[in-house]
Image (cartoon, rainbow, N blue to C red; front, side, top):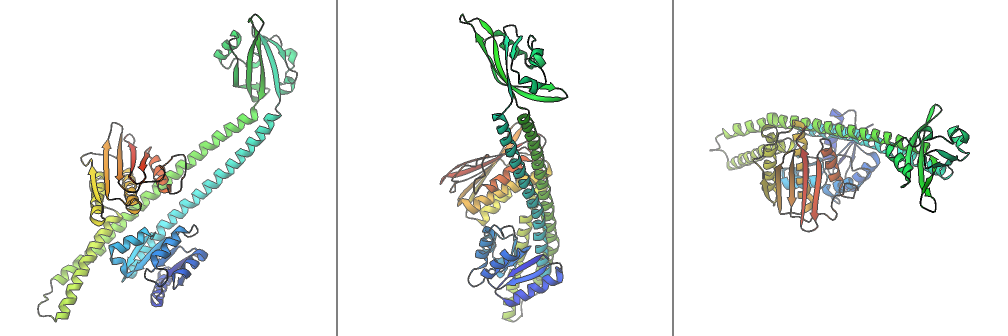
Length: 500
């Protein structure tokens, strides 16, 4: 049975959460822990679907518990929903998200608010679980096929070491003058049936140039692969030969050897077919990932619209109703309480508006990519101690709607990486349009990277960039990274305009 784990040092809070889970999620088993160490232990043992985590606890606090869970391989995929009175502080929410939390609910909360957050996190986790399972199956398939291929290669090598082969010699006219007897067991033909003939079975007719070179006596050739029909089957042979001359340098003929490479060739062709299948699987996986991203974006937008139309409107109406009350004549304590309520309502309105924009910025859907990127930089400059610069705001980029969403999320992820890891004071975002493509660059003056991203290696710490690279490949884009440690980092994405 699926489980939901709550970690809180307050028993009353645990009882409240337990009642909510049992009432609204009857298909889940509720388990609890009253401190961080016990919570980590239960998470490793039970592997719950979601963890409801308090921040202020003795011993390990919520941030430390979340960081440990996300670094542990067995629990890193479990979503963490932080629940705390500190959630009203943007700095604390940011700290929680940086620690690895997937969502944040502020105390006091309504049951519907908590339920909505849990539903969103569970939906995203279900999709991620499906994708992770398919990735595991694909990796397992690749390992099996690689192992089988290596076994075939080993067999081929053993066969090659003991391969059947036949020697031959042709004169300066191209007629066979000698063929080794083993040819009878290989080509089912007796040597006497070959001697005196030219280009037997098409040995030298595969390439007119090779035939000309062979008979001119200028040179031989190495590792020429040909396909011959032997009875009702086809076999592959590799030909190596060299010319021989008399003492006067006159060309006498050519001597050579034929190796039966049918098994090796068939294995190579099978490997090529299998690699094409794997590439098709990878393409389908990227397409699935794109669909998941679109579904997630639609869900984000739906939640954002619900927050704006329901919670946001309700808060605004409450604020207007309270504003209509004449506060004169009330007891000072009442006036003070009303003033505090005004402040809290105003803060809640602003925070709900910010959450709405963070989930699905309307500017992206209404004004397009350039306006959304410019707005995002303005948000960063307002909420972080970072100076930003935007170049290219007059460029008009026409893209499919889904690709606009993908690119915005990619750029936002790059900006988040800068804020999390770069320790930068300046960020520059530049958009360029060329004849057949456009480029978006994110540059910062932070600590840089130890190693530049290498497309051929999965280096530790580069998995986020690898994920971006995979997403870009779905619409023929590419990622370019330049960095100097302690000086700067420049990440550029290129998107072809055609078909996008």
